[in-house]
Length: 170
Ligand SMILES: [Cu+2]
Image 1: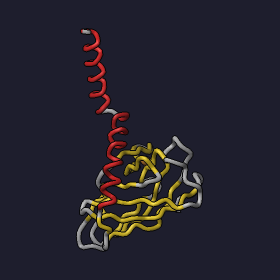
Image 2: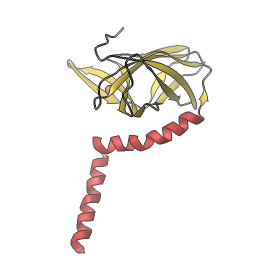
Image 3: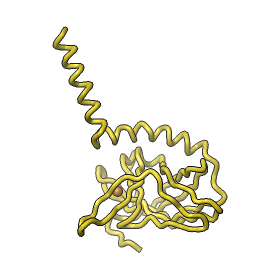
Image 4: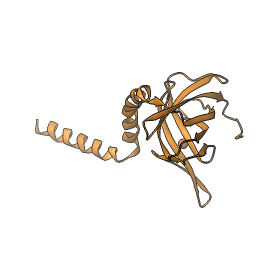
């Protein structure tokens, strides 16, 4: 019995450790995805924020696919993109690719500012949406719906064209 308790403690501390690492990070987002679906369903469609030119570079699972698009904010206030959600993918993360000493590195971001009366392009080598856990690989040429959630409680929706892995950035 004592040994069993001890093993439980070790397992528990293992979970606590993993929480600061990447694997648990993923499951936290997996959990958040359901909340995001609800949040997206309840959010008001924005009158001032538009997402256009959305396309997806589709890679075979388990590799993540990437989403690129242009966000325009015609409002008088800066807005922050906080999350994206799609019923086609179990998880959508906002990523930023940066260059350090000639090395390319991706990191997750939760707040991307779209300036008032401005725009921001998500494009290869920069900001992108990382699309993971496809429920069923979308066909090349088909359209995938993505909702974008902003800090003002509004959402913008886009239809994104699925393109093959070798698509050149435009
Ligand atoms: Cu990425």
